[in-house]
Amino acid sequence: MTGFGDASGSDTGSVYSVEVRSVNNKFLKIGTRIPERLASLEPEIEQVVRATLSRGSITVTVSCTDTDAGAAQEINTAALRKYAEQVAQASGGGIEAVDMSALVTLPGVLRPPSDGESRLQRAREGIIPLVKLSLEHLVAMRTREGISLHDDLEKHLVFISERLEQIQAFAPGVVADYERRLRDRMQALISDSGAEIEKSELIREIAVYAEKTDIAEEISRLGEHLVHFRDMLADESGRPIGRTMDFLAQELLREANTIASKSPDAKMSRLIVEIKGAIDRIKEQVQNVE
Image 1 (tube, helix red, strand yellow):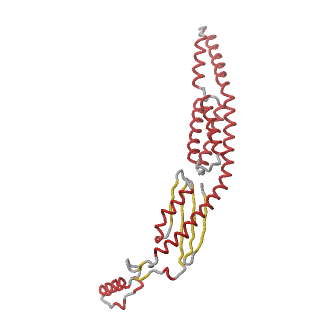
Image 2 (cartoon, helix red, strand yellow):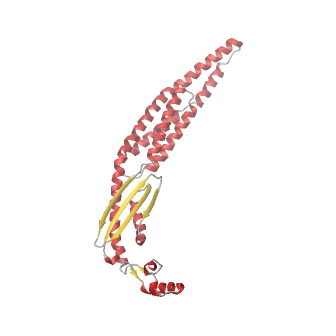
Image 3 (tube, one colour):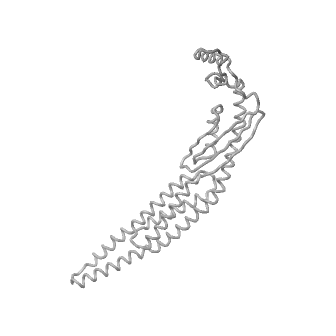
C-alpha cells in the first residue's frame, strides 16, 4: 500500500530529517538513502522497518546537517604537502604556484573529525527515533486508506455473492432445458425416420450432460472462499493478511473459470463474466493490503 511519513529533529550539533515512502509490492523490499558517514546505521534502520511493516517497497531517506564547527574534516597537512611537491615537480614549477584548493579532494588529504565515533552515536540516538516516528505517520496514512479499501472489497464480495446466488438458481434449469430440447430433437428424428429410441439411451445422454455441466462443487467452494475473505476483512488482530488475500483471490478466479467452462447457458455465462470482472478488481486491490 502506498504511504508516506516524515519526522525531523536536532541535537546540539546536528539537524536530522527522515522520510519513509512505500509503494505496492508483494513482498517487503527496503531501500535506504543515507549519508555515507552514517552508512553503518542502515542495518538498524532496516530492522526497525521490518518490525513495523511486512509488505511493500519501502524507501527510507535520511539527511543530516551539522551545525557546529567541530564537524569540519581535518586536513592531513603531510599528505597535502606531498601531493603539492609531486605536482610542482611534474610541472617544473615551485610549490608556491600549486593550487592547494584543488588538492584537498585527493585521497587521504581530508580526514574525518577525531570525534567521529561520538558523532555517530549521537546520530544514532537522533535518527532511530525519527525513523520510528516516520513509520507511525506512514502506518496512520495507510490505515486511513485501508478503511476505504475495506469498504471497496466488501462491495465486490457482495456483488459476487449476488451473482453466485443467481447462477445457483439457474443451474437446475440448464439440465431440464437440455432434456426438453433433446426430447424434441429425438421426437423429430422418430417422426422422420420411424426409428425407435430406447428410453434408457435418453436417460443416459441426459445423465452424461448433467455430469459435464454440474457446478455444485465449484459454487460451494467459491462460496466458502467468499466467507473466508470476509473473515479476513473482519479480522482485527493486526496480523498481515495481504498475501493470503492475494492467494484467495487467485482461488476465486480459478473456481469462476471452472464454472465458466461448464456453463453452456448464456445467462449464466454473462453472470460469470461479471463475477470474473469483480475478482480482477479484488486482485488489484489486495496488492494494497499489508
